[in-house]
Amino acid sequence: MNLLLQHFYSLYKNKLVFMKKLLFILIVLMISKLHTAIAQCNCKFSSQQYVGLLEGEKGSAFQLQTVNGLKYKTWFTGIGVGLDYYTYRSVPLFLSINKEFLLGRNSIYALLDGGYNFPWYKREEGRGNNFISSDFSGGFYWSGGVGYKIAVNKNRDAVLLNLGYSFKHMQELQEMPLFCINPPCENMFEKYDYKFNRLSLKLGYQF
Image 1 (cartoon, rainbow, N blue to C red):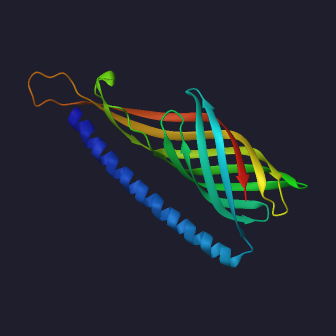
Image 2 (image 1 turned 60 degrees about the vertical axis):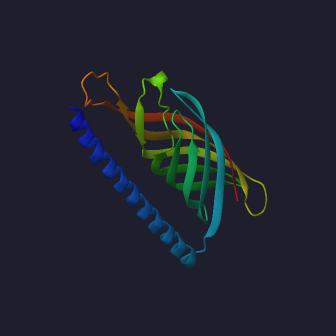
């Protein structure tokens, strides 16, 4: 059984490497398309910087995000990357789309993000956790919400307040050594699937 698990684990890791390469190619293509869009439309570069909190069944955690892209009239589209400290630290990489609804100088906006969540966590291996070693892998990431933009100057730089929902997916394969009298000995493998649903509160600045 353990040999079978090791075989599936090898296939799983190869699939993960393929997905990461495919995601990198897609991001390069998207950046190329954005460059073309700048030349063809009256778009302006814009950047959003966020700091915030995540609240879910596993407690509270800190988050950071930076999103950079193009603004056209009431639409904004950009590529975002962040740090997500909820339960197991990870790095979400995502496409972000905003739509503004103007209210004079200020505005309400809707936000939708979608991408991939890369793990950045190493489980401590030692006597305290029965010498378990593990390998984390990422998964789908998305978030959505509504916010309020408070204009601070004529260039429409703004303070951002955003409340929404955030989801991240992670997987872990644990390997635990078993007590053995007659080597060679096989280790035990266990796979865990983590799906984190969180409430997201963010404070940011757009320029």
